[in-house]
Every structure is written in structure tokens, then in C-alpha cells.
Length: 102
Image (tube, rainbow, N blue to C red; front, side):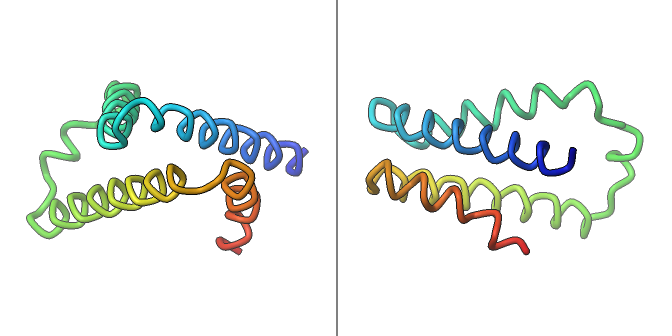
């Protein structure tokens, strides 16, 4: 059952990245990423505990902002790299990507 979940996740990521490659051929990368991050943020907005977030210290806000910038930069750079790479090589990179987390 665990392997099936991993295969589903890999398929979803592969599909997302291939669609992303197709999108960025017609639409600027910055716009695609802005739309993805905006809708992703709005989808999780109802789950936010505002009382907890309101009590964040300055250091905690700094960490949240730095992590957000890190994520946006990483996805922006990988989208740019995918736009400059052949689709067959992109699928190879995506397939091997989970091995980097082991």
C-alpha cells in the first residue's frame, strides 16, 4: 500500500511538471508560479489558526518569510531549467528527484 502511494505521488509530480513545461512555453514563468502559489495558498487558507500566527515572534516571522522566498526561488529556478531542457530529460530528472531525498 505504501509503494502505491509513492507511485501515485511520483505520477502526480511528473504530470504537474510536464504540464508546467507546456504552460511556460506560452506564459511567462513568473506568472505561472504566481498563479500556482496564489491558488495553493488560498486552498489552505481555511485551515489557518490565526490566533497562533498572531503570536509569532519576529524571529519566527523571519523564518516563515525566508522559507517562502526559498520555495519560490527554487520553483522559479526549476521551472526556468525545465523550459530550457528537452521533455525527455525533464522526465528523467523528475523520476530521479525522489532519490535525492533519501
